[in-house]
Length: 274
Ligand SMILES: [Zn+2]
Image (tube, rainbow, N blue to C red; front, side):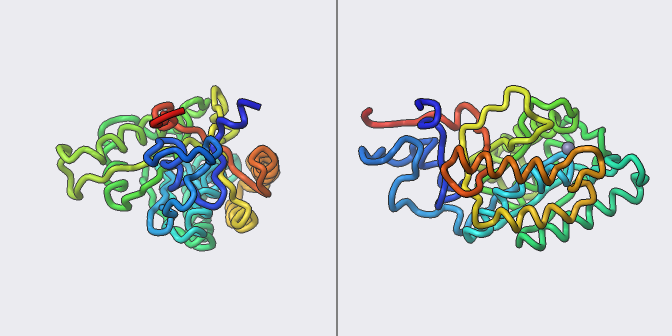
């Protein structure tokens, strides 16, 4: 079972502690299983912010909402940023009506989870990858100061999702550079994760499992604020995400879990001995 021992099982500590298991900022204890948090390590999520950054509100809550909810449960702050309102997602409701419905659902769902919302106003299907959008996200990263960001994996058939991946990577780079002078001062994001999403499945390889048992039902209930949750647009999000939480819970040896993927450099470990 070499494959499973390489995965990170994050149970009580949340994503903020992944620095201890993935980046190896603390000495490795001989009694510690690979990928487990260092015993006695500070629960970083207690005062930090986790920010989901998605192309559309549904992605922010369905694919990325459980880590946000778990982070808030652990005592941290949660922020849902959507680059568009996903206003073209309904075949029957016109965009000028559907956009405000999506925004309203986001605000109700975020309230249920004790998190904040933020929106950019790029048109659905036309989220642009350019300096202006990267700097807009950079400015919001500097404003909310997340320790952890969760976003789309690049292996998506959806153009907005691919652009969101690229925007977030550049925005994190810009946000951390003091020489990039903006209204707010520089902020370093400690960790970046990519969320499991049926639309972003190409080459997605989970390496981190987050135990979300305490918040799973609340997250699913919050997601039901969205009109599309029960399959109105052709995909049964409710069945998919509930099933995945159960399946990932089995893999993580937890009740319910979500699977995440790390950038390769985040998995590099620095150890004093093997
Ligand atoms: Zn989407």
